[in-house]
Amino acid sequence: MSISSDTDGSGVAIGALDGSIDGQSFSSFFGFNAVFTGSSASNIKVSSSLLADSGTLAVGTLSTNKTSGTVLTPGSTLVANALNSALTTSYSYAATGSIGSMKGTLTAYASRIVAAFATRASSAENALTRTEALQASIANTVSSKSGVNIDEETARLQDYQTLYSAAAQVIRIAREMFERLLAAVG
Image (tube, rainbow, N blue to C red):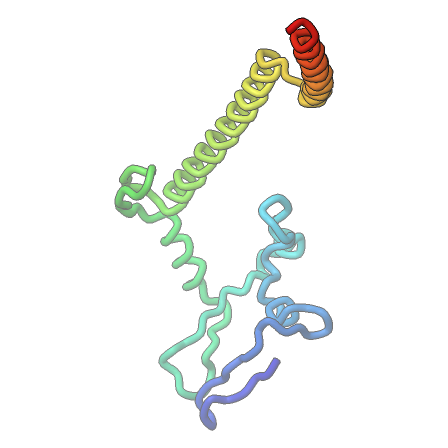
């Protein structure tokens, strides 16, 4: 990881965010992800230290109007208020895919999206179960109706071939005997 200035006195660039510091990610090392714990949707939760003291929630904002001096305003509620406004303000959403148009909050729309995908996933899982059951049923029906066992049929075919060869030999001998009998009489 490298932290360097873009130009003398006017900004910082942070590179290689995929690196690690003492085995931690960049954001974890600097406490940027101290709000949540867990690694997936099944075990994510609010950090216990934040639940114990909500004053530890970083609410400062960067000032983009400053070229020098203090650029981070501590204790500002601007970020929290903007997030609350984004989540509670009613917006109009156009229809997309199987989700119809609606007017509501971002959280309501997100819930609708999750519900639509959960419904589609459940339908796909049910269709797969029905298809697998149908395939097994058809395979059983074909097997029971045809009653063909390849090993048995191959053994029978070999028996028939042996019998055919024996019958051909009997016919050949009978023809020779008949020809000799005709030659002796005639």
